[in-house]
Length: 108
Image 1 (spheres, rainbow, N blue to C red):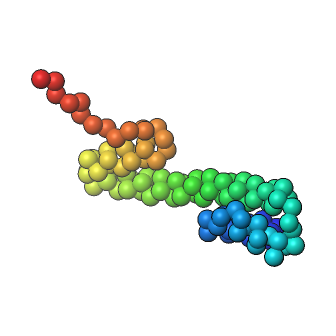
Image 2 (image 1 turned 135 degrees about the vertical axis):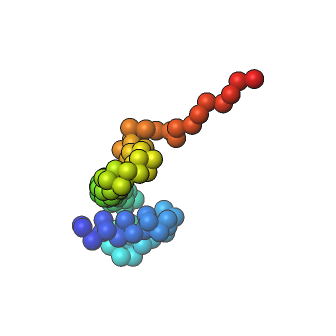
C-alpha cells in the first residue's frame, strides 16, 4: 500500500492526466476500479499536503534562526538599520506582518 501511495504521489507531481494515472494503476497494480484508484490518489494528495506543511515549518525555523543571528551581529556592530530590516523580514516570515510597509501616498 505504501508503495502505491508513493507512486501516486509521483504521478501527481508529474502532473499526469487522470486517464494516464488510471492506466498506470491498471498496468502496475492490477487495479481497474476508479474508486479504488481515487482513494489512493486522495491518500497521496493528503500526504503531500502534510509533507509540504512540515517542510515549510522546517524552512521557516531555519530562516528565523539565521535572521536571529543576523540581528544579534547587527546589534553588536551597531548596524541598527540592518537589525530593524531583519526584524521586519522575521515578522513577514512568521506571518505577523502581511504586507510590505510603505509610506502613504501624498494627497494633492
